[in-house]
Amino acid sequence: MKVLELLKEYQALNLSQNIDYDKFSHYSITHHSTSLEGSTLTEIETNLLLDEGLTPKGKPLEHSLMTTDHANALQFVIENANHKKEMNVAFIQNINAKAMSKTGKTYQTAFGELDSSKGVFRKGNVVAGSRYFPNFDKVESLTKKLAETINSKLKTTIETIEQLHLSFDAHFDLVSIHPFYDGNGRTSRLLMNYILCYYNLPMSIVFKEDKSDYIEAIEKSRNEESLIPFRNFMTEQYCKFLSQEINNFNKQSKDKGKGFSFVF
Image 1 (cartoon, one colour):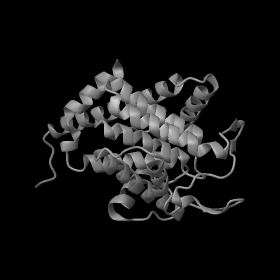
Image 2: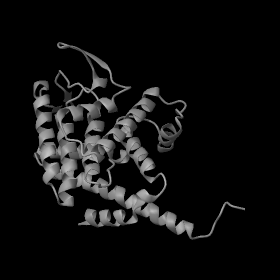
Image 3: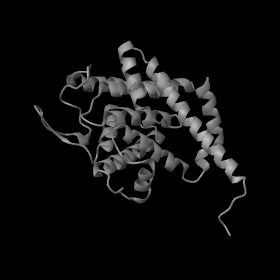
């Protein structure tokens, strides 16, 4: 299987041994995930913001705040995955709260004022185009069921392809429940990367340039009531990421051998 072959080749490179590889890989995940949600920061601007605290000129402040929130949420996810944090509803809510910390909004509802920066579940129904998401009164029970399923499978799933599928399925299920007022896409992708990190697998990117295919894959899986279309899409994205990293490493290794130097 291509994805397993690429994964083996990627892991053999041991890229984490290279200085700052993990840091800039995390920045790239943040850049693509926030770009999917409307951030206009370029990848260079994202790197400068997260590395040096430089806010890009002429760009909405909200986009910078979205970026720093996501970076903090990703670090939260990684740390908890490294400690094998048990999956539960509160943890999923905490991921969302981290992702929406500085950009969450206040909503007036029949249940009172709700702050979407706190990871609260929505108290209203949501329609996107012709797509109706589950009624708000089912959100908590569906999220609890998802957390229990993930928790159980984390302890029993052994084969690498099954681990990948678990991460992709959790991504799809959470974004389909759409439990929060804001940040459902970011939270779902962070949940996916929590699972990948839990298994010590490379984390995944949904590339910003593939946004339309991403949405189409989600809709196709919903319409067909099958996880296969979304799994196939995410497997392609994972292969794309691994291939890019392998090619970048090989190119840099080749360039180093050309003997060019800036030392005079």
